[in-house]
Length: 147
Length: 434
Image 1 (cartoon, rainbow over the protein chains, first blue to last red):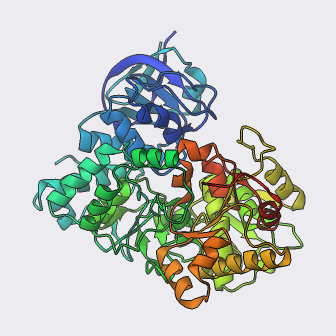
Image 2: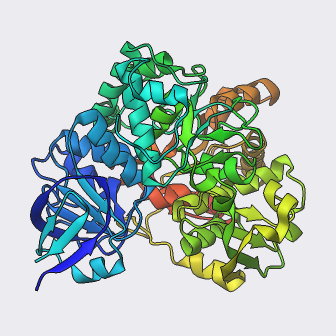
């Protein structure tokens, strides 16, 4: 049965794809650093403190997370990942977006003309319901369907 | 023009519509959309000087350099001359092997070009590279009430808590945008409500604790929320003397890195706590009590990331965040005293003391110590960011010790409090640096 959630749109768009779920704070620098430095074709999570997604592919996925954490360079890191084509297709936040992630997705949209579809405030229930590998459909108005 | 909830002045609307150029419009759009994400009602004009976090010319952040090129080509500069975090490299004073140097040149290959961009954007001067820009020797000390758009986490927490200025904990990139446009969205720590405490942290201690461990305990517990700290002024005093500010600087940096604290209040000590007292505590605030047992638990919980934990250290970093003049002088004197006491000509491992260029200059002028003598004793004075040094994978493999909880958190270095680290330095017979 499909489950529907409604959040707030930060960067709008439609996408249907595979979920990658981090139930703990997503450390942007630690997660992307290795793939950026090694100029990988696809980004695999290199954050050893995040066992749930460590080593898993992030590029093109629907990254489901509570918030991002870590270094204040995070906005630039996300933008760099996007410029290299390593970014997730979408980021779905259960909580209100944090300033580091907001900087990254907004600057990517405005300055690189690339969209990481972003919806926040989906609620704790969303993060409890979604599992890595689920198909997730995201709509322009902030609706999210888990299939 | 898209309809925004955020109320803009006539001038801000004109900028957004592109009447002052397409690049400035893009900068304004970025700041406005960022503000909308946090429900900001308006933009506030910035005061004081800017401080930026990105000081390193890393090869990995190429899109950032591209944006700066666009801004510079359009003739845009920050609203005031800015300071920026420390430089990453100092081959003269910090030990590096040939292999490490080659890797550093690859990692920070854009350093020279990036510093040129910073000068074009409005860098204060060539000595403006430090994370403790608020020291008088640096010349970027915000006044109480100044509205800032800073991003260096240790500087943000100091400016908010100790100086009573107002800044959110911004990301790199957004700091540049806000400081170009000279405005920041009004939300979070820029509002009276956002500066209220949601935690009461009570100290049950008979002696002043190590600032780094206390800050770590607070950060790990409250994460990004605002703590109101009770029982510290009884141990630290009720006046913001230079020594007290140094203590709060180190405590705040640990709370900002072990957690994400951007503002704390210390009862009877920090400016807002002195003025408003417990009115700063929000109803329903959570409670955390810290005693000696809790501090010991926190200290013992730190993982050792060395491959062989029993290895003897090879290098010691002191000064993350950068040391004040008094801290630098005290460390040099303490190391000299210990050398004399132990009748040793030289420290067994290099001890690298990191401080702002302005503080190092003052030290050279006011303290009668020959630089050659310092080097001969294995005491190195530098302006670098030790975190940047540890970003080099080869350096990260070395057994480095530090008295900084921030450096511990973001690197493989091992933390010891001041009283222990002095013994570790002298009791080691670890391998020497090349």
